[in-house]
Amino acid sequence: MSESFPTGQSCSQCHFWRGEPYKHGESESRICHRYPPKPMLYPSDNQHPIMYVPSDYMPQTEARSWCGEYKRLNSVPSFQTTHL
Image (cartoon, rainbow, N blue to C red; front, side, top):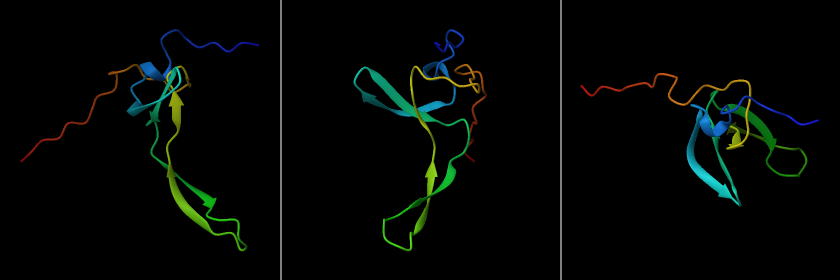
């Protein structure tokens, strides 16, 4: 079974795909900023008792990836700051 997605709706064309590109081979990855960072717990070592340390996580996706949360690039208003 092959997966398909609507033409032009990949991460590389999404408003939420931001950050400095990370290149690996022919692929390019960036961070998806659709949602705020999610706190995650993970073991800090393999010693007992296992210690858990909070961490922030935002998914890194490849340019050709896609999801159901796609928003066309520049379709979401940006926040503007004013200097007083």
